[in-house]
Image (cartoon, rainbow, N blue to C red; front, side, top):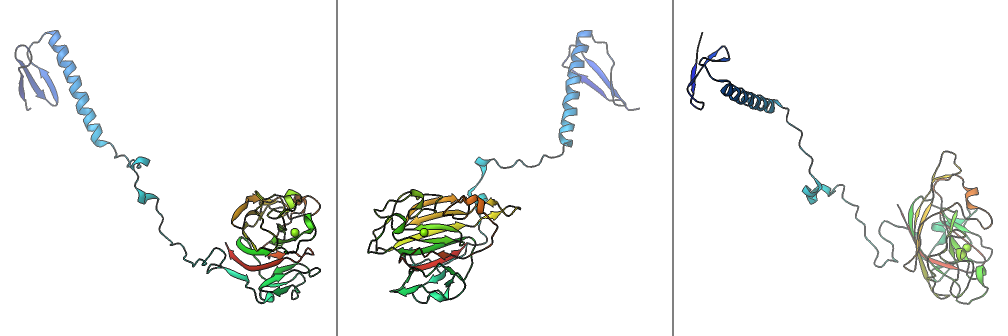
Amino acid sequence: MVCIKESLEYFHGSVNLYFLNGVYIISKFINLKTMKKLLIIGLMLFTYVYSSGQEQQKTPLPPIPAAPDKMIPGMTEIWNPEVKIIQSGATNRDAPSDAIILFDGTDINNEWMGMDGKPSIWTVKDGALISTKGSGYIKTKRVFNDFQLHIEWKTPSEVSGNSQGRGNSGVYLQELYEVQVLDSYDNRTYRNGQAGSIYKQYPPLVNACKKPGEWQTYDIIYTAPRFSNDSLTYFTPPRVTVLQNGVLVQNNVSLRGPTQYIGIPEYTIKKHGPLGILLQDHGNPVGYRNIWIREL
Ligand code: MG
């Protein structure tokens, strides 16, 4: 038996404590008030020692994620893979290095054909493709899904006809969705049928037409439709943005369906894959030049 004797001078009088097998034994008579103090202090000491031990045994907490105000710029930087480098054109009219040239002012039959697959009978004059009455529509030999298209067009300088009969042609995206080409300079027609419209679906935001006989540009960004399982409705519709002479005239509009002269576009939706670019012969001698396309 081992006894440890301690003296506590804090209390009134001397208190002798003996430590026997882990238990303190008060060996000297003390009054009840002092006993209460001792019990309270003992309880506090026990609580402190016990809680200290518990703290040390706790499993370390995972690190706290950095709060937004603790972030550094590098946390949101993406470096790889590096963005593909291309050569842009000398001007916005000139084809970038990754574009497919659909017409460079020379041979029409490199990239175009008649609707029956035979060589087109459109003429080439002064570097421009000219639709002549009865020559029929033409379309590209290649087919496309999503793309950026640049095309330049000119209505006849000699004005004849009015409304839809003046300088009418059209650029059909995926052979189905017409961006109207028309002499809309001082020539009223229905607003969703003038130049820059998505024919009978969306009028242009503004009339940005130049005078008849002047070259104009369309820059068209097209997103092809994705189809639902029934093949008769769009899962996501075709979407089109058009700039005419650098002016936004169609702002990412969602098409209702293929272009219809008579009828409801939604009724004629039918699943399709990649298709060509089509130019309309509407009986007016409209010219086209400098046509290029970038697949997206
Ligand atoms: Mg047309």
